[in-house]
Image 1: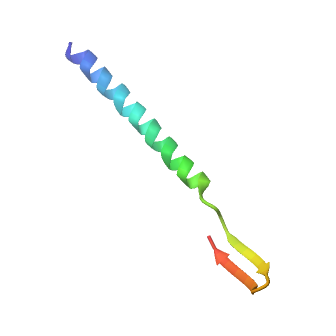
Image 2: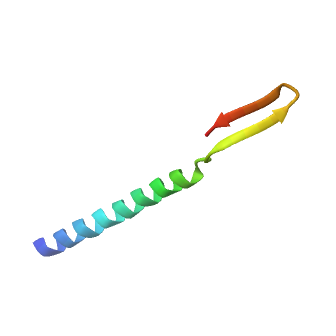
Length: 49
């Protein structure tokens, strides 16, 4: 009985790690990169992202 509890613990830890890694990758991929350059009536605006 103790061995199966350890197996459930390992599987649960792996599932949590995969979910955490997925959330991290999603947040990193959704960030805008680089510099944004806008030219309009008010002149030139440079915004670093």
